[in-house]
Image (cartoon, rainbow, N blue to C red; front, side, top):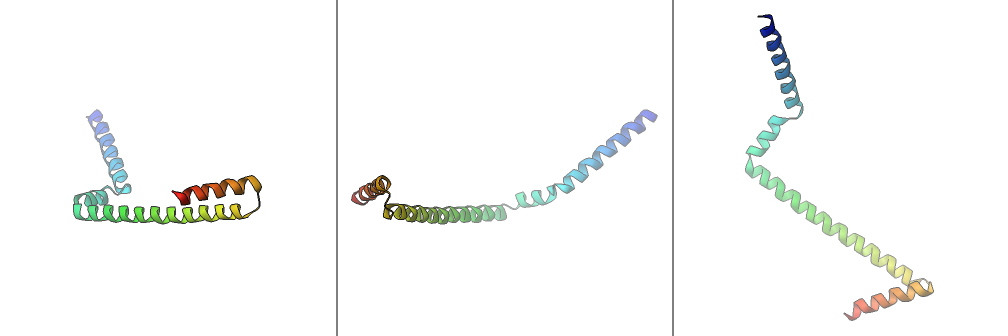
Length: 95
């Protein structure tokens, strides 16, 4: 009888611990989110759209910055580097 009570208390502690872990991890909220497929698809679509927009914007800004820096270096009178950049620009414009 005493051994059964010990096991019962240990089982009760384990269940309480599992319950508190599930509450802390917001498992119920996750299950509610996963069960609503319309909401899940809408959120995935919007996050993909915004991610793509951010990449396009970032690439454009970094590309413009790189081109501007190359122009500044080409305009500076560093002999070998300016000639190299000019030849690259001419090659890009010819093709």
